[in-house]
Image (cartoon, rainbow, N blue to C red; front, top):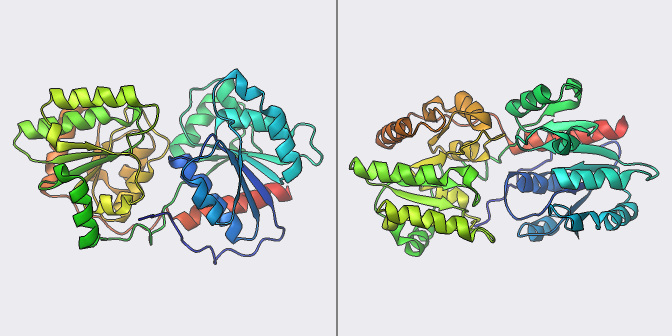
Length: 383
């Protein structure tokens, strides 16, 4: 099942001027920045604007095209000198497209876009989104050069303003990511057919409470902590299962072997499942007893937190960065100090026994994010 958001944009007033907006991103595989690119592209099309995405391609391109955007395949995100040879191709593409706005969502594509629009007449407006807590320095500073800079959380806005003292605060706008409540409906339960199919595919996940940690195959996401958590729960006599959702990705073979070794060492081979990214995350969350957010470094936002809470599923996460910001506001019972594995075990046991009630979400809606971003495009174009 594809749970991509389809929240209507009909409440947006028709724009005074139709725009051509080009979004630059390394690829369209999976991840928060990629999903935001897709969601803003959809909103642009629904509002009558022209939407173009330039990337190396990926699994989300088919949906992007189906929803009315255009896609230009050009690898701008590979950290290699060869990428610089594509500068001429990008400049040529932008001259042909004649965008009103170039919106960069990653550092190397931002540098490529910045250089490409120099000398263009008329010169497109340049905007950026800071999606992550990047190491401060000249390379990262390009994402603060936009006429407007979108930060996806207050945590991230505070971070960039503290590290780049020359950055005018008025240029940095907080536009949190949002989810479609219709795509993650409160109290949703998947039908019997889906559950039968899912547990037939992954029989090791049946028969005990399911802990799900969604995240790419990178050490940042805290897979090791999740594995240790399951092993410690087992030692305490608490039966559970663990799903590492989305961890299987091309090029991550060495990391996956490391995780499999740890799982074997802890004696929980039959209680853990690793999968590639899936489109039925709504149903997976809905059958999970606990959603984990255990990034070992602060993250800028924490989209899985609001997706799970929107479904009325409890979340357990480290209280730092954007995840800590969201949990403090929406589900304080799910916060634990970063890297405090003992407290993590205790809180997991408590939530598996009796989780505090979760109220329906009244904020962090996709339509709010789309509306605010399009309004910012129009503000920049008018300026």
